[in-house]
Image 1: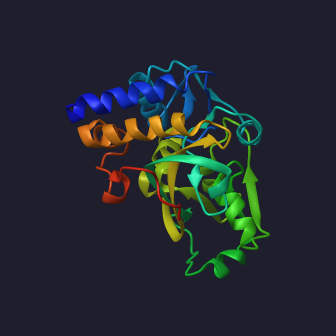
Image 2: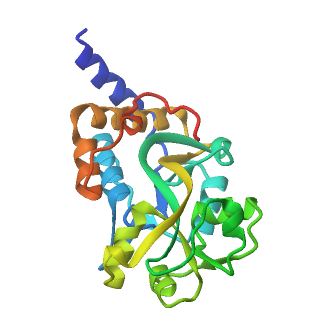
Length: 259
């Protein structure tokens, strides 16, 4: 049997064995990965998930929900797919992973005219306050690092860059992938802020609840691998981020353990 035909038959078999229950696809607001604009959920991860759905003949809608509800659904139900959470050691056994999809670098950002200079997390702990989105992994991670000066920001429609520029706190923790979208929303030039310290590097994945059938998870990974081979994943990454994905993101096959 030709290899291409065998691969198509295997994909059809895997898809056919995973259609017993419809997927619930959920994510939380993290532009430009997933966010709502003019009533429509969009973003890099949304486009990627929808491209995979087309290949898998899946038509489940993507829902944008608060992070606590997203996590609760994934930990109590089967056939739940989380869109682009960070894969970390702490979360490794909580989900079945498909990816990698993107890499984010998390910085402490300060105003361009700020005198703040940071060389370590220890120095960052001495700041009077640190702004950051409540739903971000950075919030969980910095809490675990003993930070007691965190000022979490919750709710939609709040731009943390505006708060930083207004002098609410001296620093803002943010992923580099989010920065440009927030600058555009606040109508601020790129030189308004500067990175003061690189705190964390993480990879985003798709995360299936542990009770989801392994065949379903494997089918999604196989189609992602195919997108990486045929160039469609690279084109999508280039369109959203203005650069080609690094070699680490082009890995195929079952994902290795997260960072």
